[in-house]
Length: 86
Image (cartoon, rainbow, N blue to C red; front, side):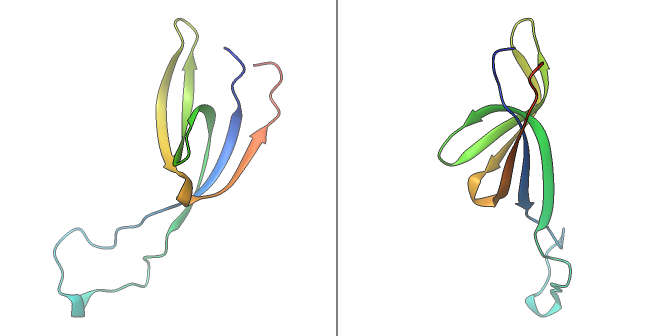
């Protein structure tokens, strides 16, 4: 694998409180705070707007599996892991 960074990304994910149509007067917002998520993986791509992280890497040929694209506006912290023997 070429030199790719392994990172821990902390980010806020959206929450849905209803799955059906609800009248405004019946809406409850008690549990609608964004949820803090921690994603650990290999950096596939970084752009101005987002980061793509993969959980799995295949050597032959270079392949990724279980990727997630996280908007930078949702990211609260990125830590790089020191993994010298990968």
